[in-house]
Amino acid sequence: MKSSLSVFKTIILALVAITVVIGGIAIIKAPTSVVLITGGASIILLSLIWGIKWEDIERDILKNIGHMLVPILILLAVGMLIGSWILSGTIPFFVYYGLVLLKPSVFLFATCLICAIMTLMCGSSWATIGTIGVAFMGISMGLEVPLHYTAAAVVVGAIFGDKVSPLSDSTILASSIVDVNLMEHVKHLLYTTVPGLVISLVLYLIIGFQFKSGTANSETISIIQNTIMDQFNLNPLVIIPPLAVLILISRGVPALPVYGIGIFLGCLISGIFQKQSLLDIAGVLNSGYTFDTGVDIVNQIVQQGGLSSMLSTVAILIAAAIFGAPLQTAGVVDVLLDKIKQFSKTSRSMMTSCLAMHGALFTIIGSYYVTYSVLGPMLKTLYTDYGVHRKNLSRTMEDTGTALAPMIPWSVTGAFIATTLQVPTGQFILYAPMVYLGIVFALIYIYTGFGIGKLYTGEKVKDIKQEVS
Image 1 (spheres, rainbow, N blue to C red):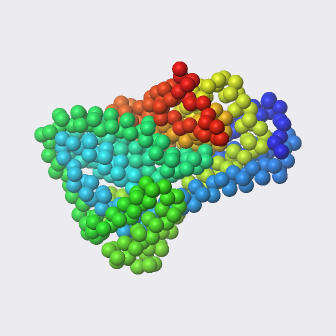
Image 2: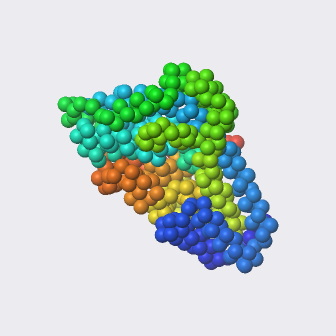
Image 3: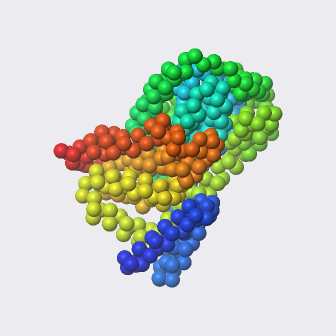
């Protein structure tokens, strides 16, 4: 049974939660999981003092962790998948031949596409930006292409891949936190993400016209390609695992079995083509690819993956469950939802409010791990109440979280990008239209009804387009 705390006490709990999160993340800069657990502990302490039973809080914590079990298994599978695909030569294959495509006039265009493909393959925009992205910045200097153009192309490609890759931890988190099927979430993201990518690619082609006279003579490219060729057997058959995964996903096979097949194929090819032993394969599945290639930039590209690489994100999921449970038990979530309902008479205004709320909280905190974990569980019931699918919420969170992150200099991702690429946010962000156009397209869809997933429960609910008219 839920507690019946007064509105004043629920507001105090909400303020404590917000203060701990903002103070821990933005000011102290403590690890996200520790901040969430600290916030949860603070709320639990006050709730117990005000008469809420521990049994009720414990029940909601266990219930929330139960909801996180499948996403946790997916994250662990993704860690093993990335490790096996590096060991098999699959990801190095795409890096090698992606670099072959570079031509001066289409450098920015190719940079964006290669970064998108690499992030789709490995699921991490940070890995792409910190490896291939850094290499492209060096190539850019050799071609005399302004660095802010190249930084923008790297960011657009990496963030696009991060948003729509079923291997991305942020994509898995955004969908799982609001109980949306992973692949349904990915498909729904295409509405707001693909138009921005297309506009960005056209922009890079136009900008690239002025660099036709350049010559691609980069020592960095040669070093990366030669090292990859020396370390891996780049037989075309190494692309079988991702092809199999894409086919199975397109046919609606659940994520966990698909990843299991992808891991098996990666391990099989590692043994056949890369001549790796069972012990080496097991080690990579656990700890990721740790072999030294002798070249730092290539090490940064391939030394990834493994179960251990996902443990910090798993900790965030568990911490989010601990943080959110007492807020639910104490009735804070119910009070927040009631306030939104008072001001939102239609699903359009409700979705706009949620978009603005998440965007504002992310701008303050700068970590989508926190904002997804905090607002996702609170807001998801609103979408059902208003007759629209929760995948609209998971998409909204990514449009105002994952995609928005490069625009916020003090966000975790924004600071990483500016530091790693050595280009200030303000210099490149204008040339990365996909980053901010996702919000524009999201608002257009909300107010036209196009691209808005409807919910059908028994009878067909009122179409959002009827509200527009």
